Image (cartoon, rainbow, N blue to C red; front, side):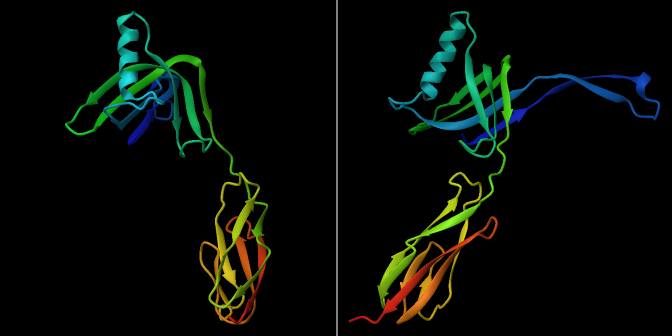
Length: 212
């Protein structure tokens, strides 16, 4: 999808009998939830996916047979599998395509609620970091060598997994933003990983020896 959106289209009622303070008061009695989207697709669907061609045929066949072109539709607000979404069994109320001369064509669709009991709105709570583990815990390098460290933020499903890498002695060993250690001169240095969430730390003790 290149663009997507939702529209609540709320229906309201009001009464001028409720304007004692000079303002007409309104009540929402229902809403016409609509999910819409536009995107691009290949002119030839892959065998392992239901692409726009097969979806176009499904909609056509259902309407021609006197049935409703219903689909399960999921609208992700923060990216796929991020846990914040609205989902429900929807009816396809609009579908169109634009077929150019290249291999990519465009489509747009609109879906409205078919079964209100199926519609759910989920918001994923942030999961705080509780620690970080650096591996390996120790490293022995000769001058000029490198060692890639990894920092695993705990728990594994923590929302913010960002880490900052620092060294206690840049003249002996440096570390990149991705945890790559480079041995500079003989001596010892401590490489520290610090989580952006909570400032939890763990270290790797690096020993550097002169090249033979």
